[in-house]
Length: 255
Image (cartoon, rainbow, N blue to C red; front, side):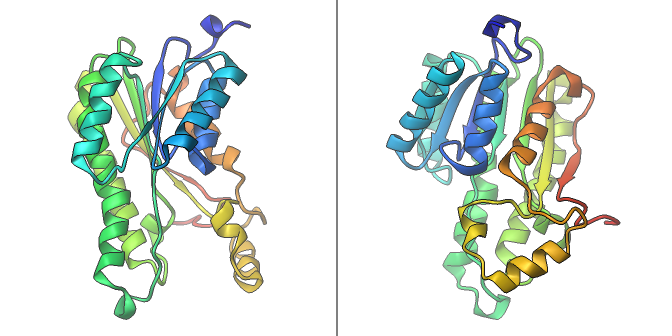
């Protein structure tokens, strides 16, 4: 089946933190369904490599742009580049995020600031910079913000991270209400524990305790997250906006 017959053919998606991890998996699933890609990440070489890989594998157009999402200047520069390539935008995935865990009494101001800047200010700046394109999407636009179960329940040692991800949920709901009339749907996904390079390095005792707290008995694979994102970007989710979807194996059932 050619790309012209795929569910997201003719669409263009921007994925922050899209050069690796969950972001790369999201970009890959969108490309598999025919969407062109704008990969935004901190390392230009990794952006270029991801874009080249997706383009050759799925036959879509893909470009990579270096960007520090906490810098309005760099974010606005990406916004201008989108006007030239790909020239339009239908999907925005705010995925870039960091952690700097510490107990509240020990948390340094720069640990707080960095996490809030990347995880909350970043999505604000990116969304603000590309809304003018999203509002012109002929079939309506999709924004998916990658929050966390930590933003719903809080986690010890994550005052900064939990606060940033909770704030992102609030931002999601505001965007959904403000821009529904412009055809923009905005939803948030709250992953639980996902197998990534960060969780692989956790001590065995923490891994065991984590698995005991998950009714399904396993950590999520990156595809468990990215395929829910892809669904929300599809026409099948055209009546879903302002929602917060847990993808946590049942960990927070009852909240």
